[in-house]
Length: 269
Ligand code: PEP
Ligand code: MN
Image 1 (cartoon, rainbow, N blue to C red):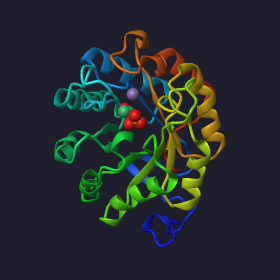
Image 2 (image 1 turned 90 degrees about the horizontal axis):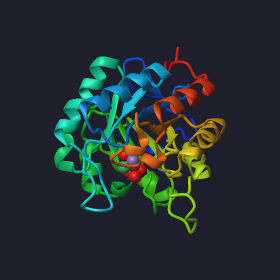
Image 3 (image 1 turned 180 degrees about the vertical axis):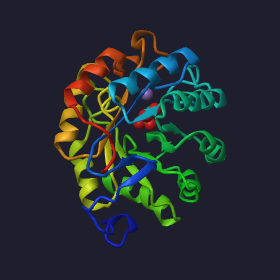
């Protein structure tokens, strides 16, 4: 089904994606991307950034444009959020990944971020995918909650076929009949995505479970399965987070997870 796709060239031989100098995804060493679901304030962003740096994260995440189920829920700080992300990069040196919700925002978000995230709900927003195929920024393509492996890989093909080969896939859970977890983390398809393409594949155990206590075991499972890294939500005060607190680690919990993983840097050499 992936025969003939550009993403399937060299299937199973991961081509590393350099996000910033010295920060490589798919280079053989797992990459940890950490930070809050949403950027909420300068204090929250600084605390989150400094603590994940200290714990050993390789990249910082944070949403400035939030795709929320309810239009009444916090929608993100938008450009002010992008400025705060750039501030976190300036004080930590960590490359930034953040979601771009709309093709009209690609240029603006690109001026602040090192890597552009396509959210799960936008995985088949073909206009957005085409716009990202024409940028020079690496793209983190989340799997849609109801997307098959085949649809996910074809979404990546939209970006790669237009000239941007720096695409990283992110498994973030799919919708099943099981309500105990927010989504069902599909590690098997993440491994299959890596085998059927040359793209690095990472896992998001926060959205993939919706439950803080499942983040550490699912992180270990993803790394044991040979995947290229994780993206985890970390908040200085998860119980008062404006979004996704239940699936966010506290800064202390994240530090303890990182100490347990003993990963080192994301450099290939
Ligand atoms: C996110 O990572 O901020 C996010 C909104 O995740 P997803 O698109 O996977 O729901
Ligand atoms: Mn979130």
